Image (cartoon, rainbow, N blue to C red):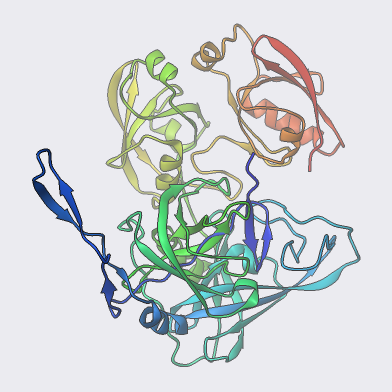
Length: 487
């Protein structure tokens, strides 16, 4: 399995840490390939002449305009269990869990103060700065250094761990250069971009590349929708801007894959724009909630539900008292449209529901028994402990489960069994270490039968204080026991 790591406050830690990019304001010149390509048709006749696209001659004008808005963030926090495997840049200087996992391990010393470095950029002349949550999370002291060398104390006014975004405020600074925010939706694969940040603490570093992909899911959270770039980024770039050729920020540097070259990831600015006002005003994010568990449709499920050739998201569970139940949605319904937008993937539905205003009434189209019907749903508010439009997650053991429905049982070849089905296993979690896999049926917890998701949750809560939880797992026609050590 590919090892993924993230940039955590200037150092590599587990799962991927993204790219910043900057692009021109239209102030630079462009050059073409030295020779046009003439395409010959059959018989020797020349067809249209194709010339290579124009590329920037340099990025100096763009960098000159963008760098004043990019800042360096230095963080100090009190930590435990920090060790050094080797000197240099690798490792987690804070020794704490990042949203992307753990990369650094060593011999734990006593509690001490540690420093880290990251990046950010000015979004408002009043002193608001956008960065990554993992850069400033649990910080005891934040120091912000502007491009002109002036330093200010920073205060975290809002954080959102689920999207790894945070807003920091500085006071007393004059003539701040706020970077304009663009549109990540309009961004094209292959577009030129530039990264500006503080890799390894080297401030105001500028690198360039192209957009390599969009909509990447890297396993960092429930709302993964990353921009991929080959612009060179490194630990310390976290939180810096990704800018298009108009000089607009279209992403926030967040993750890299250190095992590969030219692979970095940025949070789309369109996602950030829906979150920034809430972070500035109330310090946290309120998200919409439907109260359903969902799963993707497979070809076998499409045929079983009579919707072959169509796309949609299967409702695997309806939570009692939630908005979906009140609207008449049922387990086994296939959501094909939400608020006028076609739905094909659970993550798409999860993101759009989360960004929908609480209390808004929306139209939902579902397929039930082969027929399309409409329902009106009033979006509820997601509680802090609830995953939006996702199945319940048991973080202490790294497991997500769902109820066993007749359709799922048929797909898995199960007959008359009871229990819960494993929908997802977090890489590196206690469940993964115990060998549990997606598609497994958990029939017992500590030798006691499991009825459904709620029963499983209660039994895990009761058992997680112990050093080991014994699960009876059925995989196909075989049964096996797995000992899971909760975090």
